Length: 389
Image (cartoon, rainbow, N blue to C red; front, top):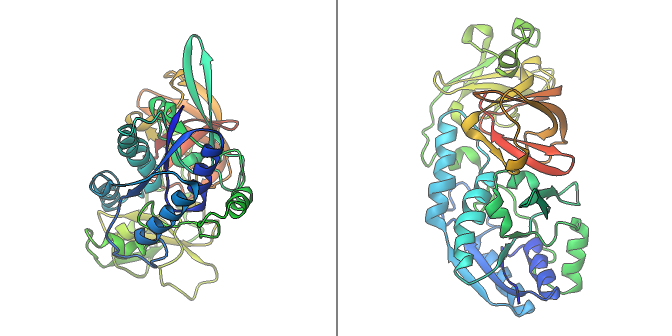
């Protein structure tokens, strides 16, 4: 009998994943991951590990499957949280959920699960996998979840073929209401449990407070850039010119206020600026951690908040489907997203010797350095990379 380890978080998605696998005749065991103990910066205790463990135990008991608790907190701190601190300190905005899946759920956790002699590891992600044969080789396709509103394939954009070969996504063909209904029908304890929010395994945090564990507060100027700035009229003729953020300098605007550390903010951010008395809402246009300056502007459509292209360094480019990797000098049209739940946008990927340029059909708002761009061919996720500029 095929043996599967389910990452049972105590939430409804992983609970239903475990139920479905058992119904399908698999030999199922459950593993609960403890990856974080510190409560610094947490906005609420609704996602506390103690509560999650209790729900996981109740679900495992109901399904009559063994539950093992594994602690990966040391690896999580080193591979995810320390990376977060380093990225914010450098003025970039990381995506811890993508790193958590690549480094923890499908690496550290996967290796631990294999110690229980399992054949596969299953999670409650809303995505799908399909295995195909091509030119005598086996390839695993990572496909978007059937529920377009909950599709989580983006969070798995850094997985490789080896990791996918051991992965199962039992609820990927369902939508969220169906998952809730199954949980209610089977009287699973997690049926009405709220979905977790915030940083993977940490919870919903006040980010500046969380980051101040390692990053010091430092007062600096907030400079407002007017909408009619000549910066928006710069040349955008080459791939490099299109992908570069606007070259903000202090003399391009006027001081509009003070902040407590440029590394606590991110491009596109609206909350936390504490600047009022303007006709339109204020947004972060750029952060300069070296000079400790935040540049802001009025309006969702500020010209300095959008651009036509982005760049990914060659060493940061990852192909989920290595057989579909394009060669240097080639270009190909894809559907691309630069953040979770963003609608897929039409774009052309250009492969160069130094990396990949992605040129969008429509200008993209708030292209954030350090986030992941993921490209799709219809509903299949083909590759991804860390946004460099």
